Image: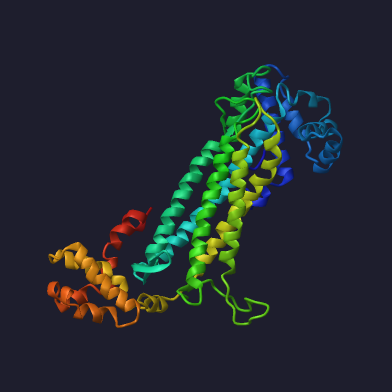
Length: 435
């Protein structure tokens, strides 16, 4: 029997010998089902199982002549199996074997990816709680907005990663279908009970209806889910790249002993892991587009999707597996600089508190338009370096008419912006941090 869902590394899932092992298992299970139906003599499947040998080199040599991989696979079994080989592939078409086996492999690959996701979620959660109260400036359009915390940023990443995990679980179920419905999908030469038996043994569901192939919207959904995940990994990496810029330097990738950043400039500490992840995301995204192009096949099936899938499915799963391991390591070892975050938060001299000041004025009876203009007037003067924002608002006659000095001072407290973090973290991580 094939060793399903226990493969330790992603490349083992797509190993050629492993693929042929699954093909053989599909053929043997179909033979067993036909035995139960009385269409094949009893004990034939067991005899074939004992004698069958997978020889990738032999298959490749035969395929050079046949120009057909499944026929080459079947012919390679003739010598070790002997005359009983004639009971294999009864009533089946090539896609019955290929599509069913591909579903097994795609499921195995996604199981490994889901394990990676759990590790990433664990690391994100740990670091989110570690920096729950680490103040930093929030930015919109790249410009300072209002105070947030670094843990808050990581909580957003955690929730996003959790959604990807749930999507992958759903697509795992969606792809786990097999088909043994024959050349046009009508079960012309063997009944649905054979398909049901094989799928049950392989941990799949029978495709409710298929023509010569499982319809490729399932595969497109699978590749799209991987592309979405790659997009979020790119998002996390892009943020780290921004935070590592010399002018910002609020966080940076771990720089190991002996590591070099540049062949020319010895001082360089570059965000190479983040940049690598951003580049790889482009490949996974492109592969999802190719999967969508595969949905529209001619009539009951053509072969235009086959060559594409041989590249994009292994490549995307291998890349996502690698990207998840690398981004997890990146976040686990990320160097965070709270003091630099504090310095950057104060860089604009308190301009980030303008909205709170505006709302405080409105609460004290000021008209919003007039209050906005007064706060903006002081803010623009501070922006141009004429004076500190706090000093300007403390001397503005409109503002001081509505707010006392203590009221103005209260508007410049960064902790005010974190007062609902407990509720936010409970939403994300559940009561007691469990979710």
